[in-house]
View 1 (tube, rainbow, N blue to C red):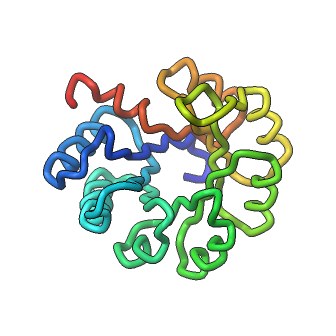
View 2 (cartoon, rainbow, N blue to C red):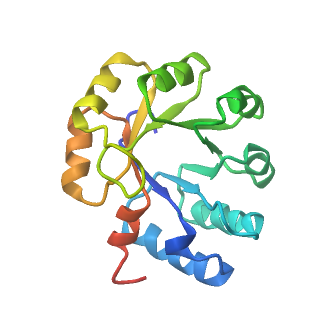
Length: 194
């Protein structure tokens, strides 16, 4: 994934459900509808997180997804053989622990200070968000700020937040971001099938 533009799918129980069979079916449809080289299982509400995470890792492996991540739980990521973990912006203190487990580590950032901190702690990459308007996620950063971040910092920056169409992805490419991450873009691409 060295120079490849990252296409990063993130799940959400709102769209994928927490029913194991339906979760797998919906994930397959999303992976089938788009090119995905990074994917993260993100579910902050379901009690069967580990069961779904196991299905997620296996399904992503079946689709040859290069980087398979679990949200926040780096110990489970290591146990299930995932590539890595996507830490929340409250988990900067866990970067070194996750790296010590030989995991690829990405962390959510919402400011330049956080990007700098992630870089100093040697995270592999960051998401910077929200780039576009997203429900309940505060003021959008916009493309200009994204472009500035990619010029200032020497860490892979993946745009996140409000990305639902190709037009937005083109703007992200022009800003020289490493790639884009989204929940809704991949769901929308697979909508006829979901």
